[in-house]
Image (cartoon, rainbow, N blue to C red):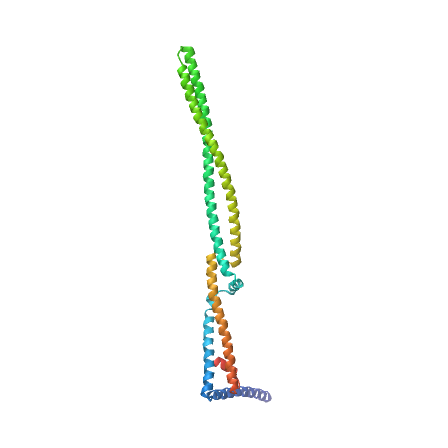
Length: 280
């Protein structure tokens, strides 16, 4: 047991000697630094101030990490950095074009409905005209039969009645016939216009589908729902890019001044210059 205690005590002494040597070196370095001439001390202090300032600036940036853009989104935006301004303008134009095409579709749908309703009205006019022609014809036949009965049975003079009935019937049927022909002629024109509108509507639908597919592809590509959202992300990305470039520059400058501090300390025979970086 005594031998083991002696062995452990010896190891402890060696560890303490190492710690004592470190502390001694550290105190010696402190004395060397304090004994530097004013010009050399000013150079050392200037380098330390730079390290302190850059370290504080980097910590401030790191403290804002929670509000930063996620790396996945940043990398996506960064991959299209040069194309983004043109992509935003093109998406805005595509959305404007989609709205115009959509308005055209609504206008054509309204015109199509109006023409379809007018065609229905003209068909009803033709149907009513045929019905009225039949009614007038039956009325004329009944009138002629009555006049014939009056003349043959009661020996009445019905010549004027025949003339008046025939005239009225002819005028009525002529009016109905003209109305029927006009309706038929207008129906042909309406049918032609309706076919033209349907053809235009189909063409516009194809344009709408194409521009919508293009927009949906770009929305999916950039993980957005509109050009406005893409523009907002672009502004956010530019702020994030500026911050990251600043952080990168700060880190580079910090590394430079760290090495500069080590160089100055080594020049003045400081044994362990690296520990002074954290104590700038």
